[in-house]
Image 1 (tube, one colour):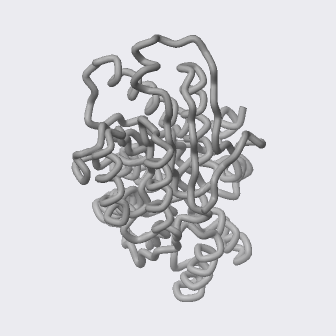
Image 2 (image 1 turned 180 degrees about the vertical axis):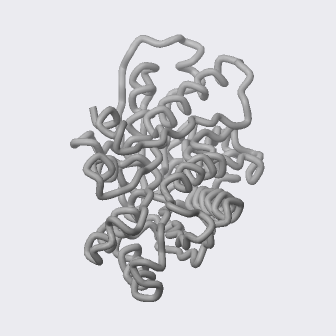
Amino acid sequence: MQHRMWKTGCIVAVMAFVLSINTALAGEFKKVGVIMKSFDEFQNAVIEGAEKAAKELGLEIMATAPDAETEAARQVEMIEDMITGRVDVLLIAPTLLDTVKEPLDRAIDRGIKVIFVDYSDYQNYPKMLFAIGTGNYNAAKTMGEHFITTLDDPKTANVAIVRGMLGAENHNQRTQGFVDVMEGAGVTVVDVQDAANSADRSATLTENWIQKYGIDGIQGIISTSDSQALGVMSAVINAGALEKIRTQGFDGNTAIIEAVRDGTMTFTGAQRPLKIGYDAVMYARDHFEGKKLENYYDTGVDIITKENAASFLK
């Protein structure tokens, strides 16, 4: 099992902060656990946001994640470790909800407050304290509407979608949002394939689509994460199709924003991972102080294009 130890660069596992804090709060809320899906740039930024809030509140924070999103079952072991570690609040980005429901039930039975991060469908697990993250369906619709504006003729356009792991709720919602917008505008969605957030798999899928439809036969490829968009972009460049095929990411990772700035990616959507992690801890603090919480907090999305990409790299 991978754990993140004392801070080295952007990766942190356990941090303890000794600050002066409210006595009542200290008695109820001392330790935060964070379980993400992997250690990619987005997941690390969520942890960084949670760290910042924990430091301000004088809390101990422990964070961990599987090496890859395909290792969803390892989150079960990590939840058990958080129970053993007696965290008061657990922030988790569940890869597959059905896989972690049982251990989360046990955590809640032990008095741990569970918060879903990078997750928007709080109704799927009403036992949680609240969910916070990008409203994935609405964000995908917003991004899909922008994507349509980049096409010469939407009603004659063919588009393929590279999605994240089947069953992952955020990718389910993003995929559905894109499909609904494309079909509503008359765009033909020729294929939707799971690349499990792998750049290599995304590149292979893109190569196959270009071979099947030809450079002139597919006008766009949408990715439900920036990790996958890297593979799509690489394959499009290698095929000499950069001027023909529109490409789009989803997350706002640095490498993709740089590609948008440089013109090798059409655009991407930036989630706000630092805000997700920071606000999750702060809202948990509000709960312990007796404040009423919402079921879900939508942290929004930013459309990043060639015109504004530089401002997101500062």
